[in-house]
Length: 447
Image 1: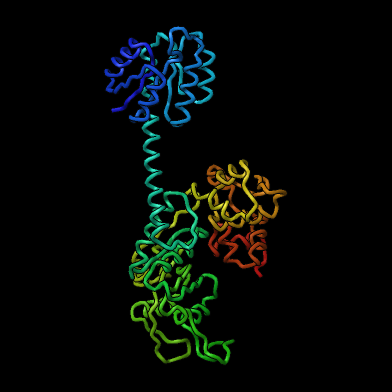
Image 2: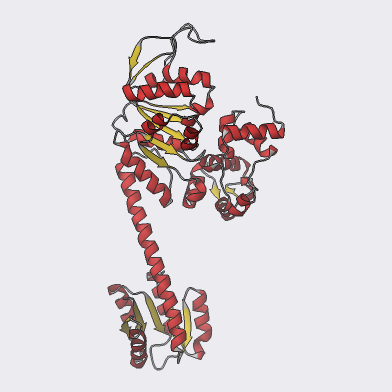
C-alpha cells in the first residue's frame, strides 16, 4: 500500500486528507512540525509528501515551508512534494515548483484534482522505484562480473551487453563450442578473448584468424600449415598453421562463413579428432585446441545454398553468443566514446547528443574511428559535435536510406583503413561482397 506523509500543524487538515486517502487504499502518516516530518522520513518509507507552508499561527510569510521543502529535497531528492498554500503564498509556491516541487494546491482544495495529482505522482514514484531496483540489480551483476572474471578491459554500461557478457563468462569455463554472431564491428574478437581468458586453457596461446581477409587458396595453409613447395610461392621452409600455433589454447576463427568447402571438411575433421596434416604433407599431427568461431552471416542461409556444411555448423554451434548492434545498446555509446578519447579530451554536451542520435551502422569499430578522428580535429580539450563529422544519424535517417554510404564515404573509409577492403567494409557496416558491388557501382578501383 502506498503511503503519504502529511506535514501540517492543523489537525483537521491531516484528518480530512487521511479520510480521503483511506477511500483510495492509501496509508497516511502525520506530522505537525517540520522537525517531526523530517524525523518521520528518517524512520519510514514514504512515497509522497504533502506539506503546509506555515507552522505557527503568528507566521504568514511561508518561509518555514520554503525551508522545509529545501531540507526534504536535500535529503530525499527523488521524493515528490505537493505544497498546500494560501493565496498569499502563491508566488513562493510557484518558485518552489520551479525548484522541483511536484505541484501546489490552494486551501481549500478540490478532492478530485488532488487525487488526480496524487495518483499520477504515485505511479511515477513506482516507476522510479522499479527503475532504481533494476539499476541496482544491474550494478550488483556488474560488480560480480568485475570481481569474478577477467574481462580484458571491456567497457560496457547497457543491460544488453551485461547479459551477453554474463553468458560469455558462464560458458568460458566449459569445453562447449561457442559461435559468436552479430554484425561487423560489434566486438566479436573481444568476446572471444574474454572466453579464452576465463577458460581452463587461459594459460595457453590465443590465436585469431580472420577467414574473410584471406584468399580462399591460402586459408588452408593458414589453418593447417604447409610443407616446403606445397603451393606456388611456398618457400623452402615448413610453415606452421594456426592450429599448431594455438595448441593448448584457443583458436578464434572470425568470418567462419567465408571458409571454402574444402577447408570446412578439414576443419570438421580436426574438431572431431584433433588430427590434421599440413598442406603437401602426409604426417598426421595432433593438437588440443578450443575453437571459438564468429560470423556476421546467416549460416542457415549458407547451408541452404550449399555453401556451408550443416555437420560443421552443429560442431561449432554448441552455444550461440549473440552480440547486439551498438544501436540496440545505447547506454554503451557514451562510455565507449569517452574510453576511445585520448587523455585530456572530453565530450561537449552537443557532441554527446550527436553520438546518441547516430545510428552507428559500423558499430563499435565506427565509434572508435570517429572518436580518434574527432580528437585530432578538436581545437581544444572539448570535442564538439562538428568534430565528429557524423552523417545520417537517427532511425528515421536509417529507414529512409540516408545511411547508405556514397562514393565519398567509401573512399574515406578505404583511406582510413589503408585500402584493406575487409576493414573498410566492417567500418561501413557492409559485407565484403556488398562493398565490392558498391565499388563497381561508383567506379572505384580495387587496389
